[in-house]
Image 1: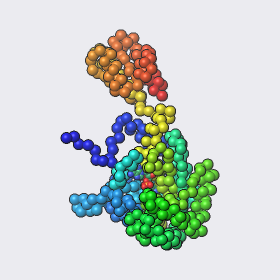
Image 2 (image 1 turned 60 degrees about the vertical axis):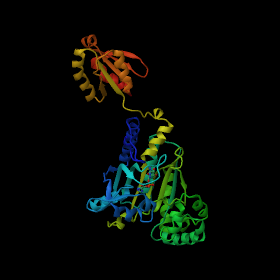
Image 3 (image 1 turned 90 degrees about the horizontal axis):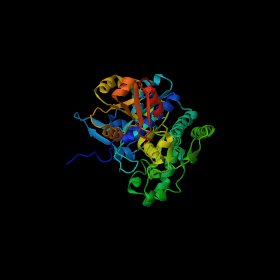
Image 4 (image 1 turned 135 degrees about the vertical axis):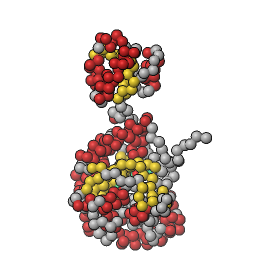
Length: 420
Ligand code: HAM
């Protein structure tokens, strides 16, 4: 019996990986233009880190973490998200000696969720965190960066939803009001939400069960309970977003599935993804660094789901956006002399940045051309003995079937030009 991958854990094959590369490179380019630099954090952390940051009564910690004891019995967890690790590293390496840190990261995250389109147990995120700024403009700037990234890769039809979750001053009052409301509709809530009313009432607003959605329709809105500081911050974020030409939908029910948020939270949804329509999400988390033992540090960040971004690009067309695999040139030398001379020629082309595969197999030119085609070559470059003597080479465009003979010395430049 053959062994298959674990359910919810996917291979990313060459037919897709060029799209991933395009997304990653575009993100790096845009993020770098806002002054972000990369941080690499481990895939495994102490379980306690996620319990203390994401929150013990969240779905992620209660039901979705891949936690295990290692050979020494230490409780470890495959990271379900990146923010907690970035904050841990920020404290551990005293990155706070710099007034503001703008950091981005990418890599696999792990959550034991029910796999479906756009939702996997191992999924990849690209995330960005800015640590050390409380300014509402920073919230808007980070959202602008994300929106600019989506625009640059050609994703349209996205909607930005924003909310404010208040702070340690105003949220307790809201929580009390919400608990009062939920107690009144308790019988209509799912078992999970009923159990969490006292510990984490906000979760009921995020619950996907129809009963809970119906029962909480007239729940009090958090935006009505914000203290002056939070209301002022939220107002300034909205003004700053609009000054940047970004349209936002205010969604007071959006509470997010992680407990560390304070003030601004947001989600970007896209049509065409079905139920799993959030392509990116994030917000402010001003209390997390101090909760984890660091100095009080206001922070803002977000993460996007790579699979969802790639799915959207694939569904709405790659060619039109100029997203395609690297153009491969198949080099076909004919005869012993051309094979020998070819080694040096191909080396030069590779050094010039071309992607070249050599088809050494002897045999009819026709079957070698077929092989070039099956290997996905964009061009076949044929060097026969007579051509070698004349310092020429034949380039065949595999897409148009057009054929030209060029000087051997000009071939690399011609191929590079044609590949654009
Ligand atoms: P999150 O909303 O849990 O936030 O995840 C962010 C994004 O990751 C989602 O919008 C979605 O695109 C993608 N995602 C989440 N779960 C899955 C899954 N099972 N399969 C595929 N994609 C998924 C966070 O993780 C926060 N750390 C974001 C953040 C950074 N907040 C502040 N800084």
